[in-house]
Image 1 (spheres, chains in turn orange, blue):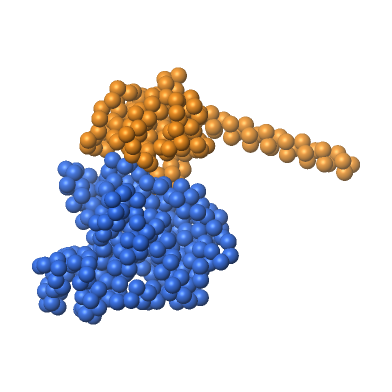
Image 2 (cartoon, each protein chain N blue to C red):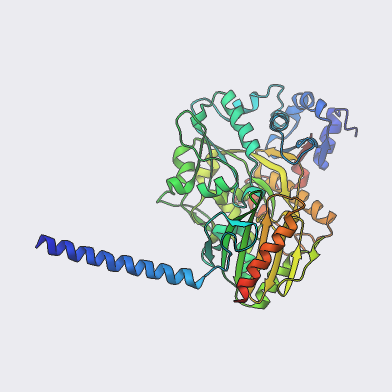
Length: 168
Length: 335
């Protein structure tokens, strides 16, 4: 009797666990980040797990920056840390906006300053230590923590790797 | 006014009331000691700058940072002794929290070398290492900003609110109803606010008062309408009013646009500290600094962008009285 109760409890726990895992997987798929794994882009190692934030949790990630994105139309953002050849650290964010117009709104909200225009996505700007581009509803921002002669070409390489995944 | 010679009392008062006084570093400590009684302490803001803070490199030099901190604190308190300011703020046996700001990661968070310098001075003033607590919302953010988490006996503690949680019972004032971090309510007796000077997409400017969003469980509820009246109301919560004693604002690196995120293209290095006990005066001064930098870069004013920090007027109004946002009543002393 006691054994049967234990089996029932174990089975129930397994069902609950399966439901939780399935729920978690569904959520993960909905926000599937097109962030490259280590060495999928030459020289770049993915040094952190991918974290995803939804409209409800965006301010946990970008605090007061969230309002602007929510107002424009925001679905989710995926982010991860990277390192180039063991010496240039960077963080890559892929924002999934509600539309291409929403991505454009965010892209154009920041002044271009001394940015270099590069051929990437629908529009792109490269700075000495960062790069931002938009493609359809996606807005991608990559920021490096070290400014070296290699930083900008390295960021461009990673951005191109991300762009390929957005197109798939 | 010469930057090499301390002004006389009448000149000083005249200039303070009008805005900013700039002094040579060598003169300032004697000056501050001499004129301390003339300065309205509540709305006094000291901005200390060291053009050689980084030497010839890009990293802050720890010794110069310690000296800069001493200069800022001694000027504000009018003291010739580097430990005396700390003895005004804390006493042995108290647990002192250093509330930093780390949400933007390593590129734009409270400088770890500054925090080390503060922790060192606190210990020299008689605070036990374990009674110094460096903290922010989460351990992860602290680590990403370059801090090392620690709870080891005999060591300075460094921890996130996520490790100990928030109170179950909320505190409320005006529009806000928040559960406060247990680091604030239970661990610490005194809080020194150690935020960072930043442009802020919602609030316009963030330095002193906005940093208190990092001690509540539901900051996302109060980001609407330019964080107004949220910022002012959060700073009225009884435990915050009681425990937050002084602000040491990190303006070694700052951003004039794109904040609070780290967007290096809008970051500059003022290599300064901004200290004071009036959070409204500090934030008002921060606003002016950011506007000047935006103008240099040909950007619209925050007002023109619809994000002037309206919470400043709310914080200064009769329902809050957290400090002064009236430039005529704010004494800014640059050293």
